[in-house]
Length: 457
Image (cartoon, rainbow, N blue to C red; front, side, top):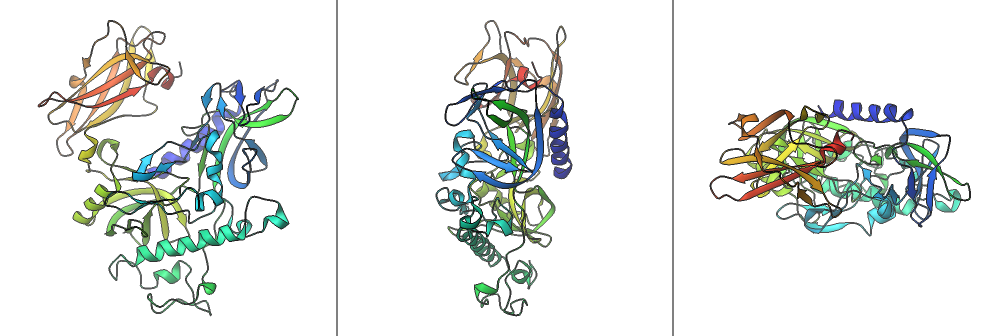
């Protein structure tokens, strides 16, 4: 399910932009320099590992391309899909942008950007990366000999953190849930290269073998820009997987039943076991962690952990980055039949299913949860410069209850609305969904979509 979705998106992102016109015409670099498209158009596209990053100049080299990360494109902030900035209390502060580019550096991710707080009753927010954005062999090299952004000291800190996090998580699970030689299989070895015989009396650290890893992958699709001196810059300007550029360590997928689950503590991530894989909640400050339940409603780590504890054998699907063959750092988790009541209610629509035909109307599909004792309605309007929805003049709330297909088992509903009148690409470019509790009259969720942009108008 996940693998097919991500592979299709990645391939489409590369192919679609190679012959298409530029998405943006003007970019502003981090230092305020304005650059414009080089004419005739000269495009580039790449998907591959990062070789190096230049924090001072906001540049990275990927598959031979020196890519420049601007502050903005056509006045809009430049963002990196696949990334995430998480603050205390697990607050999502959005993706890494052109202005926060320095968060990609291993040095900052390992030290400055860690979040040592715990997430409510769950484990820590971000204890630091367990994998470098540079390949293992290169990350161990010295800048004094290469001039590149990497040091063996930072790489050792990352590798030590991997063993620290994984061993702590391993000890939280009852014997038999993971193979007895699990710590040996992740790289904790003896002087002769064998597996330790006692998981509580480990051999000296100098014999351990950190799993071989490649650099993080970047997907970029864009054009060459020039400044007023004629200097050229490769700038991604074609939307890629929801951002101006896409970043990810890898997109490894595990789907199956949970055989063991354990909430963490201040120095141990929450974790669970699927098959022979130990899944840890992502601890890298550069990448997100999202848990989705019924109707793609967000689920907190604490609620998810309590659900797993009360429901042994729960089916889950996880996307994240593997470190070796036995440890997965989860970045996205889906679990059906779970709704976190702290959310109140949730509305989601299906990407790629928005359609608009002048003279006929707007079509869209999605879901709402919960649905018992709740109603859902829409209203057309616009999003102002402050990002606030403003209802259109002479528009009213319109129920879409008649379009619902209710699933009483999950207390959710899907909707499939066809050719709805009222949308106007010039005057009413946004739509607001409102979920109301029928018993209290309380509005429990408002969700706004810029439908005109979603259909390409």
